[in-house]
Image (cartoon, rainbow, N blue to C red):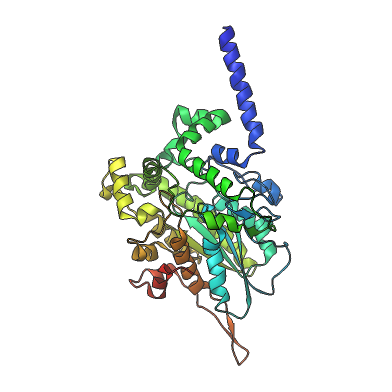
Length: 420
């Protein structure tokens, strides 16, 4: 009995230690992350309060993937809320794809490439602000817009929506689509931070090692201003290093592809309805503020990479006929466009450009430099700012809906395979 009491006391102290340490360590917060847990962001009154409910936390001036976060704790250039740029401002909202695309250097990110491409097409000053936060979904991004984005008075807001997890982020009740949320082990991990740390460390051991290497590359780096990239990180970055072991990555994609299972149509439609309501609300608020709103739907790698698809099918023991791989995009596009929301579906473009040259990082569902360049090229053509004409008028692009990208020809977007 004494031994049992001692063991329990040690476990209680370890549990408390993990919870306290998580308030100070971003790495520990990442390990504790369970993005499918239902989280209410609507009552957050400030950006610091909102950010503290995420794995990133509110950490101004900290270094993340070779970039010094700005004073607002975002991986973007410094800005002052309420100051309007005399030019063309794009605001990018989203998750890890918008934050760093799995750790890419700033110069290789789609927002940076988009800013450069747009700047070459106009005589106006162009600024693309990146307000991506890892491990978040549309509900978080809606509140971030209300607390931070609207004060920036953007001309355009782009919401990056990743098929892989944005249907389930913060949803909690995901049924078979989130098997890790069910059963005794899942309930125990939800209640205990210590159990969750142990479980998640096993799952992400490869990614954790990669993160440690990223930190080492910028240790002792030159001092730079907030909202600025560290050159040393980009110089030593290895784009060919896998993030996960292959078996672990296939397991991740097997879980994600459950979203497309025909047998889970009812669960998917329920999740779609919840997500669509949030995105439509965000679109309305952005448009009421006088800005253009565009949803960029980001495909998961199993939808693009035939080899990965075969491995996932083998691992799951299912047949291709058991899935409708295009359902997530097709239904989301249908619901959003019926509400008048502008959508660009990247799946057809990525499929047209897939081949020997990859679009995703090795064993990682985030884009590599080429994938980011494709997205930047599509968005640049879509968002090209108005030019001043000799007669004093202005010209700009017409609104483009997803059907224009699915007509069988990718047209000018084929040049996206050549990065800036």
